[in-house]
Image 1 (cartoon, rainbow, N blue to C red):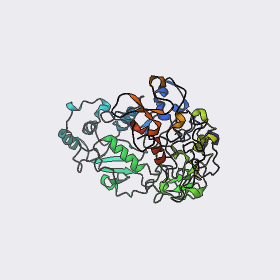
Image 2: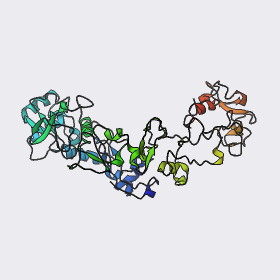
Image 3: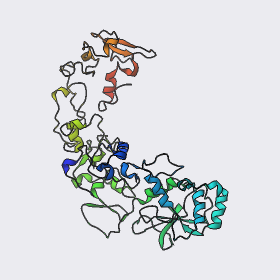
Image 4: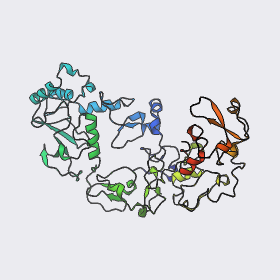
Length: 459
């Protein structure tokens, strides 16, 4: 685990190798730049156990196999990795001839530029594998995951070589993978039959899908053999010998095979830093990792981790309330909400990300005595008044002179089934009847239906 000063957290500069210190993670857009510039965010970068690091491009993706995947690392590093993984090595129980027939049967021959048409096709491969391969053998010659997961094939039981790449047995380190009880020994390795595992699909027809599911199965195994540990900073995965840091609890990443790390309900009592407490505590007590805020997924049952109008631009960092909220310096249950005067009663709900916003009130409550036309709302291109009166009699812009609406009592309106921009009287707006495309004349409807999401404003 890497530690950084707290002031480095969410400052628009990646400091952690996995980018977890930056909530709105932009690294996936950096591939082209990383090809030509030597930057620490490109060179010093790690990926999750389910993805492959493209190296100097700084991107993470599935391992590519020619003939199966269009996605490839710009550096070709994933193809080189695939070649080395499946390469024929000595010593080996199988011959090079057997290996070649397997490469053709599994349709991964493009990795080695092998023309299988001259070697074997479909049913011929099956027969040749039975003839030239040992009764039981490991393929590929080295582990396919975590340096201890091996695949074994048997010519006595497997007959579908050309339609399935599924092995007969999978061998592993039983001490590290206590969730899987071995049922057989092969070459002194602990193993189970392929069909004794729970797979997303019963038959794997191609190599990329098989390796993906193997990674999903065995990523929960411990990478080290630990004795029983007792520490308040560690969490023991239920039914497993694996320990993880308590800071990996409820971070949306499943580290335990039974997802007990994501189901753990006592994270609020651990008093950890950089935790986001979901606002509606009447539903559940959830204290999520701060990196789950604004990640485009609703992790809180009340959705409070995805406040629509919260954003933190680089030019606003670190002073705006939005930036402080994302950094965690302002808590989700903080009642000390500070608003600019112009935000009060302006027709836009601004503080739904605080726990003091309930059905009893918010910054748009008891606004009957407040005028909707003020120096802050007038001609700001937002309908702060329900009928947009604050946007009438505005100075002409570069766009407006092209059309001839009466600026005193009309708004611009794109009529359905018409190809020109027209006008609509202010008296015909917000009357429950849609006259303009996108219901631009009925803007108050969406504002009332979805007050917490400014991205939903037109029908």
